[in-house]
Length: 134
Image (cartoon, rainbow, N blue to C red; front, side, top):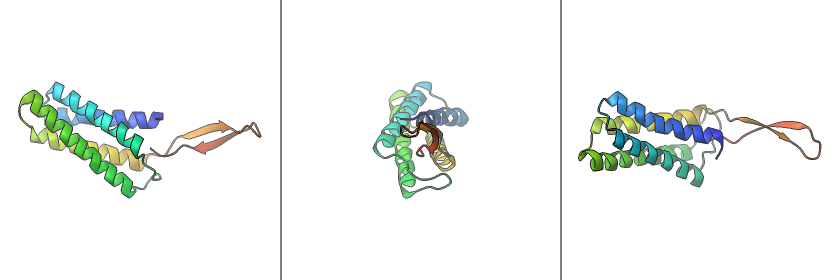
């Protein structure tokens, strides 16, 4: 996992907190559990099927990944909310799912890739390469 994928996972988890606070009904234990599960879901999804689209485009794989993350967010919020509060707070659920979808799509669409400098063993001169997109 490279640094940009790690940061993207953290942004997804942070979006859960922002959505919960914005919805106004924050159950911190439920929100923390939901954020951890969404982050773990993103890292597992990324390990099994990383995004390969170029900057400024979205592939079908990205849309499927977005739907998968939306389902993970909805399930994690629902289960954690039921266990902790005994009920589902629909406004929080909706805002968390929307925030995960917007965060994932925007970070995937606008990611430029990180240029990496490598040294060729044959020429011993640095050459710039573009790291794969997250």
